[in-house]
Amino acid sequence: MKKNPKMSVIIAAAGSGARMGGLSKPFLMLGRRTVLSYSLETFASLPETREIIVAVNPRDMRAAERHLARVRGRYKISHIVEGGKLRRESVANGLAKTAQDADLIAVHDAARPFASKDLVRRVIAAALKHGAAIPAVPVKDTLKRVSAGRVLETVHREELWHVQTPQIFRAALLRKAYQKYRGATPVTDDAQLVERLRANIVIVESDDGNIKLTTPADMLHARLILRRRLRG
Amino acid sequence: MKKNPKMSVIIAAAGSGARMGGLSKPFLMLGRRTVLSYSLETFASLPETREIIVAVNPRDMRAAERHLARVRGRYKISHIVEGGKLRRESVANGLAKTAQDADLIAVHDAARPFASKDLVRRVIAAALKHGAAIPAVPVKDTLKRVSAGRVLETVHREELWHVQTPQIFRAALLRKAYQKYRGATPVTDDAQLVERLRANIVIVESDDGNIKLTTPADMLHARLILRRRLRG
Image (cartoon, rainbow over all chains, first blue to last red; front, side):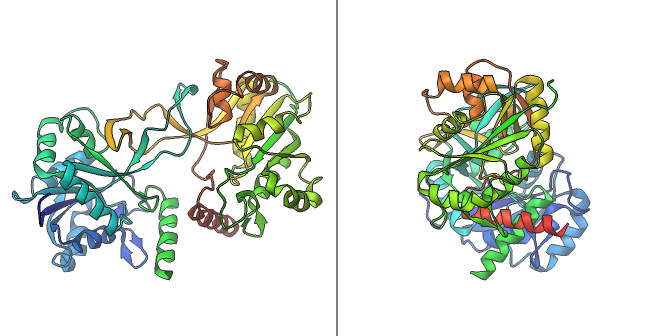
């Protein structure tokens, strides 16, 4: 395991096109700050983080530059890049800007403001050791496979995990995966491209607090989590 | 489709043995009422409901009888039965008490207080038409199949749905499924037993509001949902 590893962080803040109340999710207010600022703060506070690259929706570009102008130094932001329609296009654009001497590259969704510092540290440690690591929680619900509105079967959930971000990879591994497979069939996370290289990817057990903000109800839930944190 | 169908409702309120703060979940307060009372009210308000059978944890039996004594009539409660260690034992004990002339039997988790009347109505209609119906929401997260802490593959989630309750069945169908398969390998919901009969089970699209209260964080989330409802 390398001492003092250098990590470049790509924060995917381009959203999915679905907006909540006219604003892209990363720039919505959560407490007194934007959703995006929570991830920026968490990553910037880690000594491993050498730079943060933020990929934003082209329509948010000006607002993002204005919003981030004063905090670029504090948050170690090296680049603000335009995201693409697909999440992986945003990540690819960010990847092109990462420092050549990075040991690790982390990819994180801006819509997950509550990834804890402890979680990120554990994912970093596992990525250094195994090459690729992703946070996840076990599936607890009953899942069914359904076709045309009819149940086909109950899915064995024992081996199924809900995957989250940040996903962290040795830099060479993620670059190779994107080079080879970025044009391939749809993917929903970065690990999926790395899986195609048949590389080892380990799971780091996360918690339900690392929620993804998708709906307005999620924003309410997030505000509740925040209030509880502020209280103690 | 039968006119004026008679439905018996089994509410599984025995919990999983995991308790929150010393009390079984169904008897925790949510607003000014118990968690259980929300389901009781929803089902009792439907003309299809002829009776409600509540299966409680044996250790809660006395508290349940005391708590429900005054509302048995209002909530159409015909029996309070002891639940078993396994959920299906609770349902089987309830099933034994259902009225012989029931057309439909609904099984619902007390830990889902926010199943809406509209949802229950739609599940009833689908069960009358197809024999068995369950509410569900599509899986949105990325899921991985994991073994010994390592990712095996990304799961195709297009056909996967998170299953909820109430699950509603033609009475004869559910009785047959329990008669034949209740001793079989572990199951996580009632539909799974009915699947073994190769019977048709249809999905009724539900919503994220029909949450299951599992952790203390879920209770907070539930209180938030409740506050929003009371406001608007």
